[in-house]
Structure formats: structure tokens, C-alpha cells
Length: 200
Image 1 (spheres, rainbow, N blue to C red):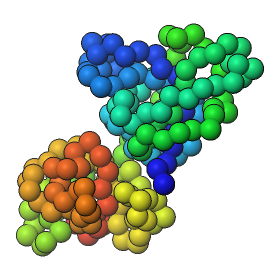
Image 2: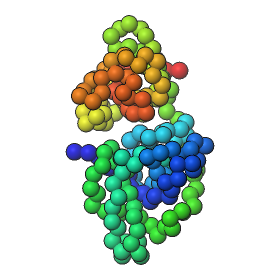
Image 3: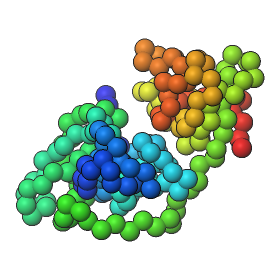
Image 4: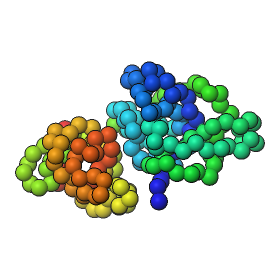
């Protein structure tokens, strides 16, 4: 079953609006995160100050339209009918928001860096022992229970956000029906063995 990562309020769908000094682009929205359900879930567009959903509470983030589900909020919860959204791994129906405050369509946001952690940058080495540097990324979890593509990470491994592919046709450590090569994982997370990570 798909997981819901967070709930929030849509601020903008303007493709030219800047988020972290980068234009939003097509097929994306800007939202303010009101409720975090999976704090360790990686953001779609991470930055050195904000990498996981837990860092984004009460902050504007970009999120892909295909990973959203609009939900109805009871009138008594908001004072009037409005649209809120649930940012999820894939589109899914949500039962309702628990912490949707009274917000206008463009609420003001305070983005403080308190409690935000910079994730360790790393190089992913080829799992087939060639020694080649297949990608660069950031470790976002080493918790063996965390899920990567619906499979627990397990021991002696890390959940890594892939930022740059160095060898596009390098095989991932745990291929599946949708993901076979490291180039399939750019802008997403991958499980990688700890002994094949080089921290920089």
C-alpha cells in the first residue's frame, strides 16, 4: 500500500514562481506542509538545509503533481470549504487532515533552520566491485526498518538520495520491475550497501 508522507495547503501552481531560487516548472505545485506523517521521507527537491519531510514542517516546498491527492476538509475544520493536499509516494485517497489551520490561499511562512540537519554527501561505488563511482548523493537514513520501494532497508545499508549519476547504465544494488539502473533513481532514493559508500 502507498504511504502518505505529509499534508498541506497548495500555495501556487505558477511554473515561473521560484522555490529555493529555482523555477517551479511544469507538473508541480508549491505547498506549505501542515502535517508530517513520515519525517524521514526524502523531499522531491532537497537542499543542504532541508532534505527530509521532517525538516519541511510549516515551510513551502515543491512537489510533483502526480504524487498528490486533493482531499476535502470538513467545513467545521476550516471554517469554509477549501482544498488541501496530501503529498504521497503515489496518488492515494486520504481520509482527512488533522492539523489544517485557517489559511488563505497564499499564507506567509517562516523558514527557520532550527533543528534542520545537513545530510552526509557521499559517492556510490559500483556494487559489482569494479571500484567505479556510479553516482553522488546524500545519506538520509541508516534505519534498517525504513522502507525503500516497499522493502525494508535491512542491516549494513543506507537509504541514499541520488543527486547525480556518473555511470547511467550502472546497475542498482536492489533492482526491481521499475528500477534497474542508477539513472532511474536520479531525484529519488535507493538502498545502497554501506561498504560501497564513500563520504565526501
